[in-house]
Amino acid sequence: MYPNIPGPCNCPILIVDPPGPAPCTDCLYARGGNVFCTDSISPFSQTAQIPITVYNCESWTANVLQAPKAFETAGFNVDNMLQVTTNPLYAVGGQKYDVYFRVICNAGDHAGKSVVTYSQICVKNLCAQVSCPPGQVCNPATGECEAAPGELIINGSGESPYGGLQIQ
Image 1 (cartoon, rainbow, N blue to C red):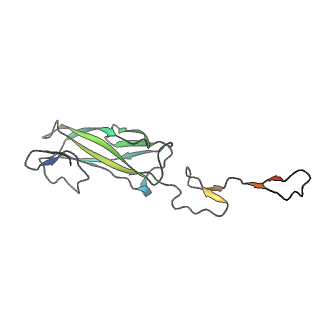
Image 2 (cartoon, helix red, strand yellow; image 1 turned 45 degrees about the vertical axis):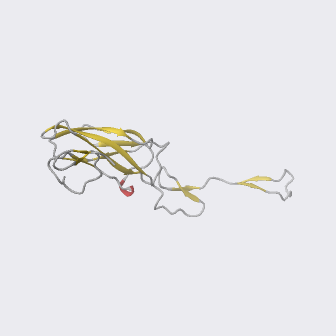
């Protein structure tokens, strides 16, 4: 699917979460951190910092190649951590989103080489474990139970001298 760089290890250009340390020192590897739903941020303009692991490189930088609309911002901070902020217009609690980025080795045997990887971030659903009593609903912004919106009741008995509309 993705081409490999020729060499003794047949180094991949796209890394999909290698398990543990890099299998070969002839290759540059990067591993994006994954964020599970229970440990994540809410859909309402919250920011997360995700550590990235780079193998076989002394110094590196990274840049985001593609991020979904679920994130208002996606980039790397001064500590080379992926930093994303959710966009309340597009982020949905319980959904997983992939942010693709390129890691470029700046120093060492692999200076000038780069690799593409991604981090998968699940946005937390604050209402997933909430059970509200009758007449209340969970507010997705806070995860707390609140009074359900009012109802419109039309009374058609005609017993009132002022008409049959009753708002409760």
